[in-house]
Image (cartoon, rainbow, N blue to C red; front, side, top):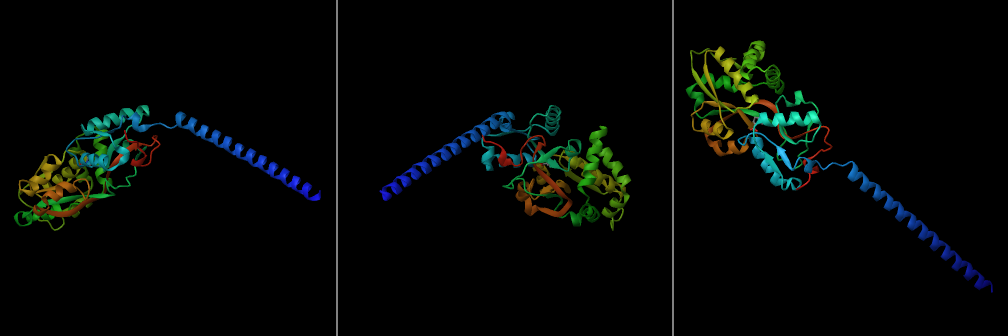
Length: 315
Ligand code: PBE
Protein backbone atom coordinates (compact mmCIF):
# COMPACT_ATOMS: atom_id res chain seq x y z
CA UNK A 1 0.00 0.00 0.00
CA UNK A 2 2.66 2.40 1.11
CA UNK A 3 4.76 1.44 -1.85
CA UNK A 4 1.98 1.99 -4.37
CA UNK A 5 1.22 5.43 -2.90
CA UNK A 6 4.84 6.32 -3.33
CA UNK A 7 4.62 5.11 -6.94
CA UNK A 8 1.56 7.24 -7.57
CA UNK A 9 3.23 10.29 -6.10
CA UNK A 10 6.25 9.60 -8.25
CA UNK A 11 4.05 9.29 -11.37
CA UNK A 12 2.29 12.52 -10.46
CA UNK A 13 5.49 14.41 -10.12
CA UNK A 14 6.71 13.02 -13.47
CA UNK A 15 3.51 14.23 -15.11
CA UNK A 16 3.82 17.59 -13.35
CA UNK A 17 7.44 18.01 -14.38
CA UNK A 18 6.60 17.01 -17.93
CA UNK A 19 3.77 19.53 -18.12
CA UNK A 20 6.03 22.20 -16.68
CA UNK A 21 8.75 21.33 -19.17
CA UNK A 22 6.24 21.46 -22.02
CA UNK A 23 4.97 24.84 -20.91
CA UNK A 24 8.47 26.21 -20.61
CA UNK A 25 9.32 24.82 -24.02
CA UNK A 26 6.23 26.34 -25.62
CA UNK A 27 6.88 29.65 -23.93
CA UNK A 28 10.42 29.61 -25.20
CA UNK A 29 9.21 28.75 -28.71
CA UNK A 30 6.70 31.53 -28.80
CA UNK A 31 9.31 33.94 -27.45
CA UNK A 32 11.58 32.91 -30.24
CA UNK A 33 8.79 33.34 -32.73
CA UNK A 34 8.07 36.81 -31.60
CA UNK A 35 11.75 37.72 -31.56
CA UNK A 36 12.18 36.49 -35.09
CA UNK A 37 9.03 38.30 -36.10
CA UNK A 38 10.41 41.56 -34.73
CA UNK A 39 13.62 41.03 -36.65
CA UNK A 40 11.70 40.46 -39.84
CA UNK A 41 9.84 43.67 -39.31
CA UNK A 42 13.07 45.55 -38.68
CA UNK A 43 14.60 44.22 -41.87
CA UNK A 44 11.73 45.41 -44.01
CA UNK A 45 11.34 48.72 -42.20
CA UNK A 46 14.88 49.91 -41.60
CA UNK A 47 17.55 48.08 -43.57
CA UNK A 48 18.14 49.61 -46.95
CA UNK A 49 19.49 47.55 -49.78
CA UNK A 50 22.07 50.09 -50.92
CA UNK A 51 23.31 47.76 -53.63
CA UNK A 52 19.92 47.69 -55.28
CA UNK A 53 19.42 51.42 -54.75
CA UNK A 54 22.61 52.28 -56.61
CA UNK A 55 21.61 49.76 -59.26
CA UNK A 56 24.73 47.66 -58.56
CA UNK A 57 26.86 50.44 -60.02
CA UNK A 58 30.04 52.11 -58.84
CA UNK A 59 30.32 55.62 -60.22
CA UNK A 60 33.84 55.90 -61.58
CA UNK A 61 36.09 58.21 -63.62
CA UNK A 62 38.07 58.03 -66.90
CA UNK A 63 38.63 54.56 -68.39
CA UNK A 64 42.39 55.24 -68.63
CA UNK A 65 42.85 55.73 -64.88
CA UNK A 66 44.61 53.26 -62.61
CA UNK A 67 41.69 53.41 -60.19
CA UNK A 68 39.33 52.31 -62.97
CA UNK A 69 41.48 49.24 -63.64
CA UNK A 70 41.60 48.50 -59.88
CA UNK A 71 37.81 48.78 -59.66
CA UNK A 72 37.29 46.27 -62.49
CA UNK A 73 39.61 44.00 -60.51
CA UNK A 74 37.60 44.53 -57.31
CA UNK A 75 34.43 43.50 -59.13
CA UNK A 76 36.15 40.26 -60.11
CA UNK A 77 37.67 39.62 -56.67
CA UNK A 78 34.74 40.29 -54.34
CA UNK A 79 31.73 37.94 -54.17
CA UNK A 80 29.75 40.91 -52.89
CA UNK A 81 30.39 42.76 -56.17
CA UNK A 82 29.36 39.98 -58.53
CA UNK A 83 27.21 41.31 -61.34
CA UNK A 84 28.20 44.93 -60.57
CA UNK A 85 29.30 47.53 -63.11
CA UNK A 86 31.66 50.46 -62.87
CA UNK A 87 30.35 53.46 -64.76
CA UNK A 88 33.38 55.05 -66.43
CA UNK A 89 33.07 58.60 -67.68
CA UNK A 90 35.09 61.47 -66.25
CA UNK A 91 36.17 62.85 -62.90
CA UNK A 92 33.99 65.93 -63.48
CA UNK A 93 30.92 63.77 -64.18
CA UNK A 94 31.58 61.65 -61.08
CA UNK A 95 31.97 64.72 -58.91
CA UNK A 96 28.73 66.19 -60.20
CA UNK A 97 26.86 62.93 -59.51
CA UNK A 98 28.38 62.91 -56.03
CA UNK A 99 27.27 66.48 -55.46
CA UNK A 100 23.68 65.72 -56.48
CA UNK A 101 23.51 62.60 -54.32
CA UNK A 102 24.98 64.35 -51.26
CA UNK A 103 22.51 67.22 -51.60
CA UNK A 104 19.58 64.82 -51.56
CA UNK A 105 21.19 62.37 -49.10
CA UNK A 106 20.83 59.64 -51.68
CA UNK A 107 23.09 56.59 -51.78
CA UNK A 108 26.08 56.70 -54.14
CA UNK A 109 29.25 54.63 -54.38
CA UNK A 110 32.25 56.27 -56.02
CA UNK A 111 35.90 55.64 -56.73
CA UNK A 112 37.77 58.04 -54.45
CA UNK A 113 41.36 59.01 -53.75
CA UNK A 114 43.73 61.27 -51.85
CA UNK A 115 45.22 63.73 -52.50
CA UNK A 116 42.03 65.35 -53.80
CA UNK A 117 39.70 68.14 -52.69
CA UNK A 118 36.71 65.77 -52.44
CA UNK A 119 37.27 65.14 -48.72
CA UNK A 120 37.71 68.84 -48.00
CA UNK A 121 34.46 69.68 -49.80
CA UNK A 122 32.53 66.65 -48.50
CA UNK A 123 34.09 65.72 -45.14
CA UNK A 124 31.27 63.28 -44.36
CA UNK A 125 32.58 60.52 -46.56
CA UNK A 126 34.48 57.33 -45.80
CA UNK A 127 36.57 54.70 -47.56
CA UNK A 128 34.99 51.23 -47.39
CA UNK A 129 37.24 48.56 -45.86
CA UNK A 130 38.96 46.50 -48.50
CA UNK A 131 39.84 43.19 -46.80
CA UNK A 132 41.18 41.69 -50.03
CA UNK A 133 43.48 44.71 -50.44
CA UNK A 134 42.62 45.23 -54.09
CA UNK A 135 43.20 48.95 -53.56
CA UNK A 136 46.05 48.25 -51.15
CA UNK A 137 46.94 50.43 -48.20
CA UNK A 138 48.74 53.71 -48.50
CA UNK A 139 50.82 54.33 -51.55
CA UNK A 140 53.25 56.86 -52.91
CA UNK A 141 53.55 59.06 -55.92
CA UNK A 142 56.93 58.40 -57.50
CA UNK A 143 59.16 60.28 -59.88
CA UNK A 144 60.50 58.28 -62.79
CA UNK A 145 63.13 59.34 -65.31
CA UNK A 146 64.10 57.91 -68.67
CA UNK A 147 67.30 55.87 -68.72
CA UNK A 148 70.29 58.12 -69.39
CA UNK A 149 68.72 61.37 -68.17
CA UNK A 150 71.33 61.61 -65.42
CA UNK A 151 74.15 61.80 -67.99
CA UNK A 152 72.23 63.82 -70.55
CA UNK A 153 70.81 66.53 -68.25
CA UNK A 154 72.42 66.11 -64.81
CA UNK A 155 71.03 69.33 -63.31
CA UNK A 156 67.49 68.47 -64.39
CA UNK A 157 67.93 64.92 -63.09
CA UNK A 158 69.10 66.20 -59.71
CA UNK A 159 66.24 68.64 -59.33
CA UNK A 160 63.58 66.09 -60.33
CA UNK A 161 65.11 63.59 -57.88
CA UNK A 162 65.00 66.14 -55.06
CA UNK A 163 61.37 67.14 -55.65
CA UNK A 164 59.19 66.05 -52.74
CA UNK A 165 56.25 67.40 -50.78
CA UNK A 166 53.25 66.37 -48.66
CA UNK A 167 49.64 65.34 -49.24
CA UNK A 168 48.58 68.58 -47.52
CA UNK A 169 50.63 70.73 -49.93
CA UNK A 170 49.08 69.13 -52.96
CA UNK A 171 45.56 69.22 -51.53
CA UNK A 172 45.96 72.89 -50.62
CA UNK A 173 46.53 73.76 -54.27
CA UNK A 174 43.78 71.46 -55.52
CA UNK A 175 41.25 72.83 -53.06
CA UNK A 176 42.11 76.45 -53.73
CA UNK A 177 41.77 75.98 -57.48
CA UNK A 178 38.46 74.19 -57.13
CA UNK A 179 37.16 76.79 -54.69
CA UNK A 180 38.22 79.88 -56.64
CA UNK A 181 37.69 78.49 -60.13
CA UNK A 182 41.30 79.41 -61.05
CA UNK A 183 43.43 77.10 -63.18
CA UNK A 184 45.36 74.60 -61.07
CA UNK A 185 48.61 75.69 -62.79
CA UNK A 186 48.08 79.32 -61.75
CA UNK A 187 47.51 78.35 -58.12
CA UNK A 188 50.57 76.06 -58.30
CA UNK A 189 52.71 78.96 -59.51
CA UNK A 190 51.58 81.08 -56.59
CA UNK A 191 52.27 78.19 -54.17
CA UNK A 192 55.89 78.14 -55.34
CA UNK A 193 56.22 81.86 -54.57
CA UNK A 194 54.62 81.38 -51.13
CA UNK A 195 56.71 78.33 -50.14
CA UNK A 196 60.27 79.41 -50.82
CA UNK A 197 61.77 77.18 -48.10
CA UNK A 198 60.31 73.95 -49.42
CA UNK A 199 61.09 74.87 -53.00
CA UNK A 200 64.68 75.83 -52.15
CA UNK A 201 65.34 72.26 -50.98
CA UNK A 202 64.45 70.84 -54.40
CA UNK A 203 67.06 73.08 -55.94
CA UNK A 204 69.83 72.47 -53.40
CA UNK A 205 73.11 71.88 -55.19
CA UNK A 206 71.50 72.41 -58.59
CA UNK A 207 73.36 74.97 -60.66
CA UNK A 208 71.39 77.51 -62.66
CA UNK A 209 71.08 76.57 -66.31
CA UNK A 210 70.46 78.52 -69.45
CA UNK A 211 67.32 77.24 -71.09
CA UNK A 212 67.89 73.47 -70.79
CA UNK A 213 64.71 71.91 -72.16
CA UNK A 214 62.86 69.37 -70.04
CA UNK A 215 59.88 67.34 -71.22
CA UNK A 216 57.64 66.11 -68.39
CA UNK A 217 54.72 63.78 -69.06
CA UNK A 218 51.87 63.76 -66.64
CA UNK A 219 48.26 62.66 -66.25
CA UNK A 220 45.34 65.09 -66.62
CA UNK A 221 44.05 64.93 -63.01
CA UNK A 222 44.16 67.97 -60.75
CA UNK A 223 46.65 66.22 -58.46
CA UNK A 224 49.16 65.93 -61.27
CA UNK A 225 48.38 69.36 -62.70
CA UNK A 226 49.37 70.60 -59.23
CA UNK A 227 52.62 68.63 -58.94
CA UNK A 228 53.77 69.25 -62.49
CA UNK A 229 52.74 72.89 -62.12
CA UNK A 230 54.93 73.47 -59.06
CA UNK A 231 57.93 71.59 -60.40
CA UNK A 232 57.72 73.40 -63.74
CA UNK A 233 57.68 76.77 -61.95
CA UNK A 234 60.49 75.81 -59.57
CA UNK A 235 62.66 74.51 -62.44
CA UNK A 236 61.99 77.57 -64.57
CA UNK A 237 63.27 79.73 -61.72
CA UNK A 238 66.57 77.84 -62.18
CA UNK A 239 66.60 78.55 -65.90
CA UNK A 240 65.09 75.34 -67.32
CA UNK A 241 62.47 75.43 -70.07
CA UNK A 242 59.87 72.90 -68.97
CA UNK A 243 57.07 71.50 -71.05
CA UNK A 244 54.35 69.43 -69.37
CA UNK A 245 52.24 67.11 -71.50
CA UNK A 246 49.18 65.47 -69.95
CA UNK A 247 48.41 62.03 -71.39
CA UNK A 248 46.77 58.72 -70.41
CA UNK A 249 48.52 56.70 -67.72
CA UNK A 250 49.59 54.03 -70.22
CA UNK A 251 51.19 56.70 -72.43
CA UNK A 252 53.04 58.26 -69.47
CA UNK A 253 54.95 55.04 -68.88
CA UNK A 254 55.44 54.31 -72.58
CA UNK A 255 56.92 57.70 -73.42
CA UNK A 256 59.33 57.76 -70.45
CA UNK A 257 60.39 54.18 -71.27
CA UNK A 258 61.04 54.92 -74.94
CA UNK A 259 62.80 58.20 -74.14
CA UNK A 260 60.30 60.54 -75.81
CA UNK A 261 59.78 62.20 -72.45
CA UNK A 262 62.48 62.99 -69.89
CA UNK A 263 60.52 62.14 -66.77
CA UNK A 264 57.22 61.95 -64.96
CA UNK A 265 56.36 62.80 -61.37
CA UNK A 266 52.90 61.20 -61.66
CA UNK A 267 53.45 57.47 -60.94
CA UNK A 268 51.13 56.15 -58.22
CA UNK A 269 52.91 53.08 -56.83
CA UNK A 270 52.87 50.29 -55.75
CA UNK A 271 49.17 49.85 -56.55
CA UNK A 272 47.37 52.23 -58.87
CA UNK A 273 49.94 52.21 -61.69
CA UNK A 274 51.94 49.11 -60.82
CA UNK A 275 50.73 47.19 -63.87
CA UNK A 276 51.92 49.95 -66.20
CA UNK A 277 55.22 50.28 -64.36
CA UNK A 278 55.90 46.51 -64.49
CA UNK A 279 55.43 46.52 -68.25
CA UNK A 280 58.32 48.94 -68.75
CA UNK A 281 60.34 48.40 -65.59
CA UNK A 282 63.62 47.59 -67.37
CA UNK A 283 63.54 50.87 -69.27
CA UNK A 284 62.71 53.19 -66.38
CA UNK A 285 64.82 54.89 -63.72
CA UNK A 286 62.64 54.93 -60.59
CA UNK A 287 63.63 57.93 -58.47
CA UNK A 288 61.38 56.99 -55.54
CA UNK A 289 58.51 58.81 -53.86
CA UNK A 290 57.91 62.54 -54.22
CA UNK A 291 54.79 62.24 -52.03
CA UNK A 292 53.92 59.66 -49.38
CA UNK A 293 50.47 58.75 -48.08
CA UNK A 294 48.34 58.72 -51.23
CA UNK A 295 45.35 56.39 -51.27
CA UNK A 296 42.65 55.04 -53.57
CA UNK A 297 39.49 53.06 -52.83
CA UNK A 298 35.73 52.86 -52.82
CA UNK A 299 34.17 55.83 -51.09
CA UNK A 300 30.62 56.40 -49.80
CA UNK A 301 28.83 59.15 -47.86
CA UNK A 302 28.80 58.63 -44.05
CA UNK A 303 25.00 58.44 -44.08
CA UNK A 304 25.25 55.07 -45.80
CA UNK A 305 25.36 52.38 -43.13
CA UNK A 306 28.20 50.39 -44.70
CA UNK A 307 31.74 49.68 -43.52
CA UNK A 308 33.24 47.24 -45.95
CA UNK A 309 33.12 46.31 -49.60
CA UNK A 310 31.92 42.96 -48.26
CA UNK A 311 28.77 44.63 -46.87
CA UNK A 312 27.55 45.13 -50.43
CA UNK A 313 25.38 42.54 -52.14
CA UNK A 314 25.87 40.65 -55.37
CA UNK A 315 23.30 41.31 -58.08
N1 PBE B 1 43.92 59.11 -59.85
C1 PBE B 1 44.53 60.41 -59.61
C2 PBE B 1 44.74 58.58 -60.96
C3 PBE B 1 46.09 58.98 -60.63
C4 PBE B 1 45.89 60.34 -60.11
C5 PBE B 1 44.00 58.31 -58.64
C6 PBE B 1 42.57 59.32 -60.26
C7 PBE B 1 44.57 57.15 -61.39
O1 PBE B 1 45.29 56.72 -62.27
O2 PBE B 1 43.67 56.44 -60.89
